[in-house]
Length: 317
Image (cartoon, rainbow, N blue to C red; front, top):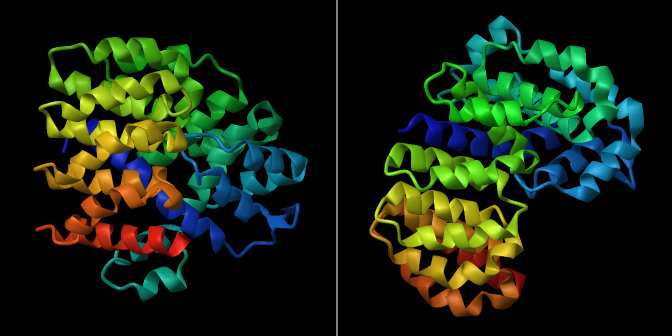
């Protein structure tokens, strides 16, 4: 798997896992409008990579106590012993129940501090320490948060990520993915990269655009036009980019629905995820037929996604 694709997928998994992990964090919770801080954290990333203004406002309303609590979460590293034991959690699930992994909590807390911006200046020492973490994803999310909290120029990361001949390009690229729409100034440069004849460069550019374009409707036609690209990875990332728009991408739903019949398994699966994320239950009926056919797909994952989608949309009607 390409490095850029692996980083992108890792971030997606981190966010998905983090929503679940943060909900069960057993620490005294601050509250705002009868919702705990962890509830607002879950809402913060419910539209990821798009920002959630209501959740950001709620976290800001909690003031400096929220910043201090988030900074403490950022600082809570797993012990060396815990890390070693957690390496076996996939084979021995009870380990994860007895030894909760702080990885997800730290990721989510750093992202929240970033969205608080300069209001979270007291958390800078904690974020700086996390930015030196041996885990590259923890380091990147902390670096991205520091950029926002310290109001650093994002352009330098955009330039570094496009300088493929340097060793810093990969790290800058990863930071931009976590910055998401905050790095929208890079859209013109990455759109230019899409014109390259080098498919590796095109894929890398498209991966970044799926994150930084998610609040910029002008990119919807770009992703839609790429749904017929001969490269299956380009098609898959184009669907992901449209999925990140939420309801702003509803105009592309009919085109994406055709991808449910794509010869590539990954494209078919991501197309179903798009329909789940973008199409409301009230408008799902016109897509029900293609989804029902997918319940007989040769791939087990695609079949499961189709069944889940039918159940969810029909239950919501």
